[in-house]
Length: 418
Ligand SMILES: Cc1cc2nc3c(=O)[nH]c(=O)nc-3n(C[C@H](O)[C@H](O)[C@H](O)COP(=O)(O)OP(=O)(O)OC[C@H]3O[C@@H](n4cnc5c(N)ncnc54)[C@H](O)[C@@H]3O)c2cc1C
Image 1 (cartoon, helix red, strand yellow):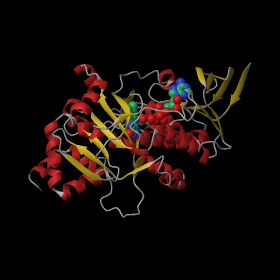
Image 2 (tube, helix red, strand yellow):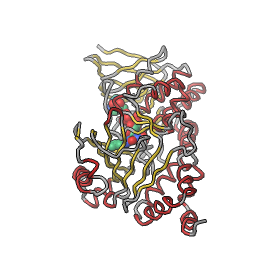
Image 3 (tube, helix red, strand yellow):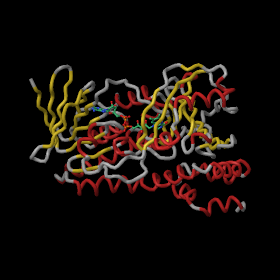
Image 4 (spheres, protein in one colour):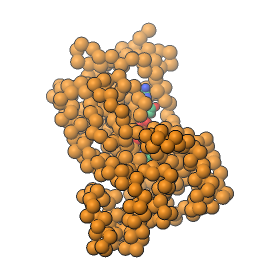
């Protein structure tokens, strides 16, 4: 027997992108159905670092949520800054907010995705939605009446849901993009990452600064060490796929080799223990402004390739794109328009207006990272100049400042101490 349902919006995927969409659809009072193949709580391979953008979308949805986050030290670790380690081993500590007052909320935090995604997932149920977990999608088909039907099986029951709008929030290897974005098949800019959880690493920053080690053999990628709750650290590497292919890198061996032999890193792992198996996953990066919608659908988060090409951050952009997709959906439903050209204006154009510059700057920074001498030079100079390290600090929140990094004049000014 098949159950047939109708709704206004179908969201495929309940990670940060799907949760972001659902929360804002609920705020607008729009009926929707969420379908996820996993059963929550579920894991996702990740560095587990949530930035200011994640905090921004959460605060906008409900300021109380961040209070909850920062009141659960066993689940969430507030982070106040970032440590860049240049290819020459010199490090630069950059607080996110150099003028922070002692009781000010941290701009970012770390938390296992098993915890974070479930935290958001538990916020979703409302009078406006129905959630299907552990659902196996069999088909996504277009109908002649300007709607789409998703067929899935849950607990041996077949369900067919029909709606005028679908949001693809199903991550890197999702089904929505593959099925619906047929006109654009260009190869995506891609990186691959590994994640490992360790206990017993020494020398972690007292204010839980996250560490990015730009080791020469991994450029333009890096090895990270992120302090997490309960004495655990998330350790991983992320490298561009074409570099992995060209240099025939075995990512796992590369990471373990650095942990064992790098003179700055290995002593800190002398008594460390790996507490879970090492796992890998892809990072679809926002290097190009690809189409992220079409007739009756929009893509969000990793399904829309929105991972920051420099930092590897994707949770914030997933939540943010989910929020924008919900706003665009509200307009589409009001006007009864679900075609590609309407959604391009209301979603693609708005999304790239808000995130496009940031992604472009990060793409350039990632390319600059291929030059270790440039990286060494900036870190050496910033260690000697408080005003330069303050400028770099402000670049985390000020996009105009960050854009300076793309310009040769920035480096000339540093060279001549202007
Ligand atoms: C190694 C690594 C380290 C990273 N580190 C960071 C970091 O520190 N900070 C950061 O911000 N970002 C990081 N990222 C990126 C971040 O993990 C992603 O950008 C983020 O998870 C994207 O969220 P999403 O909701 O788009 O997709 P996902 O989190 O992947 O969620 C997709 C959801 O869709 C569901 N789904 C998939 N296929 C189907 C289907 N066919 N039917 C139904 N449901 C389906 C899945 O079960 C899942 O729940 C990292 C990524 C990797 C690989």
